[in-house]
Image 1 (cartoon, helix red, strand yellow):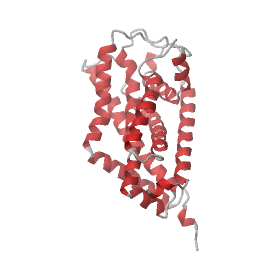
Image 2 (cartoon, one colour; image 1 turned 45 degrees about the horizontal axis):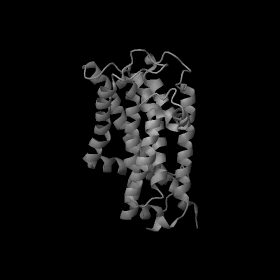
Image 3 (cartoon, helix red, strand yellow; image 1 turned 135 degrees about the vertical axis):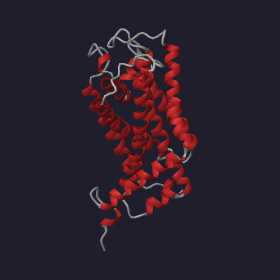
Image 4 (cartoon, one colour; image 1 turned 90 degrees about the horizontal axis):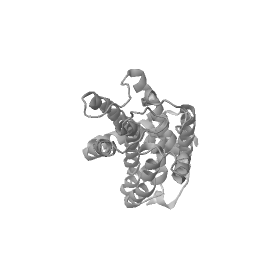
Length: 285
């Protein structure tokens, strides 16, 4: 008897079919739930407009930025990351729903590798996050050109957009994997929302997305230890290089951001695969 069918390799045709099927399932579920589309993009857009207008007068540009940087320009990359984070949250919370509805148990007993289950779920969440984040990144400069927002120090060009898309793909994959690791052991959506409130949102707030954090004492230390800080800083360097006038002045370099974001993503994916391959009583519930 051939025993390799229960754990096909990454090059096995069944592996690719499984990843594709689960990815398309995530996309279909998302676009059928219109409230998710509105919530994932509408709330961050409202945050950007309202926070930008309310905090514009009290904002002092950080030492690495041009002196006339507006708060909405500073906040712009952080909102793009918030969209990615929200999408990761809502795409991985479906793991709890799938377990409750019996779909997950059916997938786990089928002759596919659990790694393909992880990659399929993460790829679906990554595609959704990229679509929404890139849509927002495209809307922001248009609002600026229509004088609905201050100048964003962001050039809407094809090379710049391709670089942003590539970086967002890696960051989306990492954050979706983080959400997967949080959702997998849980059997309650309420518990997931509690973790989101006390862990994921503070993680974003202390990433330099809302405020620079320079000379903030212990907050500066936490921000340096926060892996999402380097995700926001790397996206900022790719999106707004014209606004950065001083390297090494509180903003991590692009090479450092790419390296740490990649390591963070690899660690989250490895943990997600480990949790999924480990047999537990929750798999039968």
